[in-house]
Image 1 (cartoon, protein in one colour):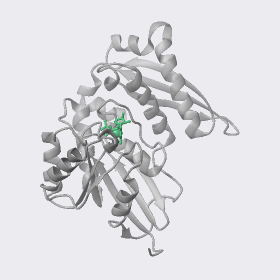
Image 2 (cartoon, protein in one colour; image 1 turned 90 degrees about the vertical axis):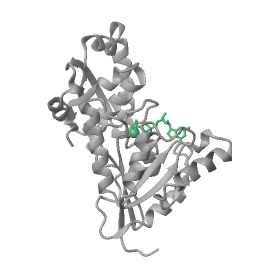
Image 3 (spheres, protein in one colour; image 1 turned 30 degrees about the vertical axis):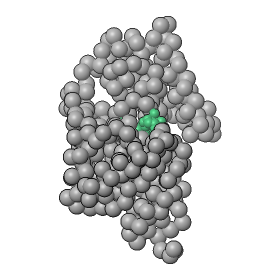
Image 4 (tube, protein in one colour; image 1 turned 90 degrees about the horizontal axis):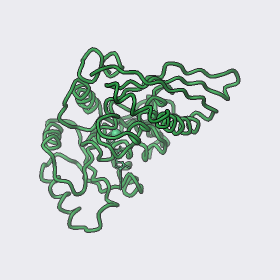
Amino acid sequence: MSNETRSVFVAITGRPNVGKSSLLNRLVGEKAAIVTPKPQTTRTRITGILTQGPVQYVFLDTPGIHKPKNSLGKQMERTTAGVVAEGDVTLMLFDPVAPLRPVETEMINALGQGGHAIAAINKVDTISDLPTLAAKRDELEAFGVFKQIHAISALTGDGCEGLLEDLSHYASPGPHFFADDIYTDQPEKQLVAEIVREKLLLHLQEEIPHGTAVEVERFHEREGGCVIDIDVTIYCERKTHKGMIIGKGGAMLKQIAMEARQDCEAFLGAKVFLQCWVKVREGWRGNDNMVNRMGFGR
Ligand SMILES: Nc1nc2c(ncn2[C@@H]2O[C@H](COP(=O)(O)OP(=O)(O)OP(=O)(O)O)[C@@H](O)[C@H]2O)c(=O)[nH]1
Ligand SMILES: [Mg+2]
């Protein structure tokens, strides 16, 4: 390998819950994106950066492709389309078992219109029979769109090295876009907001967490940098939701804040005082202006 610096932008796409954010974290070796068992966890574009010697990989995680039901969903769809147009290569993830959905077929056909695309069948740790994998591979191959089809597990790391090697072939010579020692370009405030949202998704049922948005109102490092005070507002869509987020005697909110604080302390390397408030912003997901104002218009 030559010592000339090279970079490659990789757009990661695929249906909700297929493991895009898990793969991003696995590839960069840090938690750049939140992960939950619920679909539509990722709402905005998340950048993960890995520098290996002369090659810098810039992974662009996207909201899972689905039929949008509201303004927020439409904005998420635009984000994904924009990111895919930006990548030097698109990496599309697939479930090893679930049949292809119409949105996936549409995306594959769109990828076939131009640019480079690679497929990866993720979660291979969940299947034991090779015919299933072979059938999925054949099905994807038949589109004639993907340059390579990998079988990987973001959970165990299986196949990820081969995938990286393959992606490195799409790198172009030039200076690195980011510092070699960073793994994401997200500001700390955004990482904190995402962590709080992850805990909301993990603890609350049904539509409630999907109707929440998180804003960091204050992020203050005390002198010496060992203690950080963080104030967070959680917006939800209904009064009844507010009650459920707070929980009996405040127990739910306390649990969410405690778990978020622990994660924040781990990545900020400081003691964190985290305070969370809950406010109602009725129907915000269905209102273009509110969706934009809450930071999704990017
Ligand atoms: N067994 C197994 N589970 C995985 C693997 N990759 C991801 N998961 C799980 O699948 C679920 C969804 O993972 P995410 O990384 O949040 O999926 P995503 O594609 O980013 O989802 P959205 O952001 O909603 O589009 C989580 O519970 C992960 O732990 C894998 O390789 N094997
Ligand atoms: Mg995700």
